[in-house]
Image 1: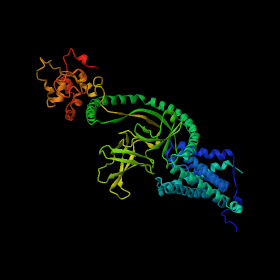
Image 2: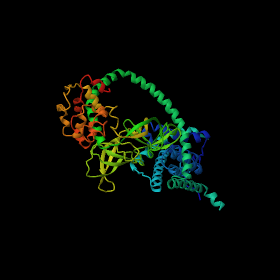
Image 3: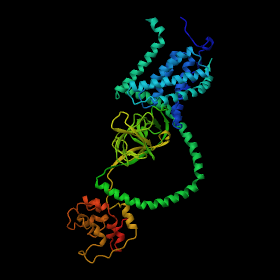
Image 4: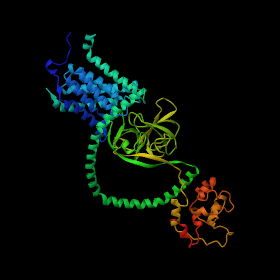
Length: 172
Length: 397
């Protein structure tokens, strides 16, 4: 049975990255998020590690790589919080898996599709985070729908810019 | 079976990863003090310690550049600031006279109530070097850790108010849980109405005081201070002001008081960690060696030197009439000695006067002292002024 895709065969191109980019960019993103947001508070609205993780997931088009990248980035983020390790880890593992699955079927090099994809994944990530922290662990957490929507919108805008920059690290 | 795992390899790995993390989460929540917790702490330690050197280095360079620029900018305005400060100093000197009198009165009342205060005796200054990077976890990282003597649960403040408490300590850094985090709390008191409550952080970052009856009068702008009841934050530190009030979300007879923190929690750069708090009973100093501010003022103000009494049986000067209704107090006064040097006072036939020879009149009078506090208090030393030739010897200042 043929798989239904929304892109031509030529557009499904698996990108590879150097070790430096694979390790360095996510670490730089986490570092930037942790350090700079202490000086620029509104940066906490963004989730730059999530953007980076989705970029790698959809570029590699490998579910295994997507979820492992998500898991590693999520656990590193968890370690910097005061909450139990695994909340971001679970959320980003699932999002990484879904993002890499979609990357196989959808043209993810188009700015419009990147915007929509990032908006959807940020919202999904925040929803998963809420479910794990509130429903699984019973931690005090709110799902403020307007806030989450605005965060998804902000991340989507930023992702379009960052994806363009990170495209230069691809090895064809 | 082999085909199944080959075919669903990715899904299997996904489920395995999720299960592993759920188990890790469960062990952290259910066994907070076990071997698993230890290994998680190690993981957290490694990751935090990996990020901290970079943050410290960048912060160090950044603060150096900022300081150079700030020093230059400060020098430009220093003359105008100096004039302003001089004017402010003159005004404050005038206010000091009034405040010293009020402070003396407060100290006397505190002593009567055997009020035990907690005084901040030691702090460590630290610089903020990072955050969690997430608004779901309102924590800060500072450049001081267990190597600098910091421990878990030490309060962290700025001159404007409470920031939070130390949540985790690493060798070179510490994690501060901000007071507006959803998992944070503090015992607080509304300064004006003296209502006590528990402050809780929220996901939105605006802390709330819960369980205050809806019919209590709480106004916007009311100062909120720490009550000391949580055994973490010393009593009386500013926390914030009342931002607004709302109905109890659970429909109970309470209201929710939202508080705007005094410290700018979104942009904290330097903090003080309170490393030592001592219990101190105010006004317990040796009266022979320490004078109150009001006593010093009373000695500095011009006084009318009374004539020396011709003999011991004579009536006391008119100013001592204030103490005439209080036998214990008058016992000290009638010795003709200053209270500060009361070690050599004689009993003069009044019970109790010898048991507290070094205490000041307000303390020695026991329950009658509150009425003293409401009266002009420097009268006693003035009335006891000795002849001019003896005065320099009695004044330790």
